[in-house]
Length: 109
Image 1 (cartoon, rainbow, N blue to C red):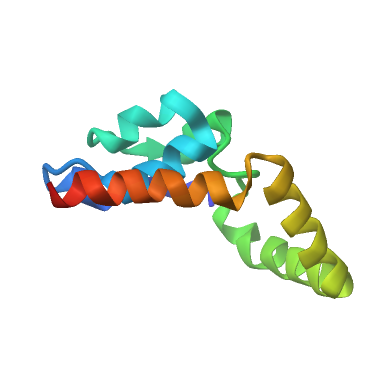
Image 2: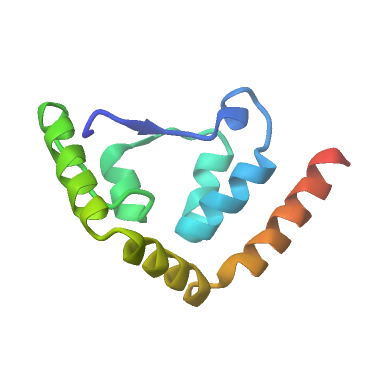
């Protein structure tokens, strides 16, 4: 929705978000540091950074969600195979697991 806002929950309480930081930085790179340090982004800023793929008016949200669900479900298992391939070619699950392990270790120190 164009009225959505985005933030990391721990940062809003004055803490650094270690594990959400992995996902945010993985998705939007260093532009995401603002979110990890407590800034809240609006929908257009999230779109520009690549955190979301589209922004729609609140009254169109349900219809767009329904349309996407129909497209994805029509693809069946092939859609999930495509997702797995995309993950493998974008750095893969192994690198992501390693980054989460580093974040988790930092969080408990």
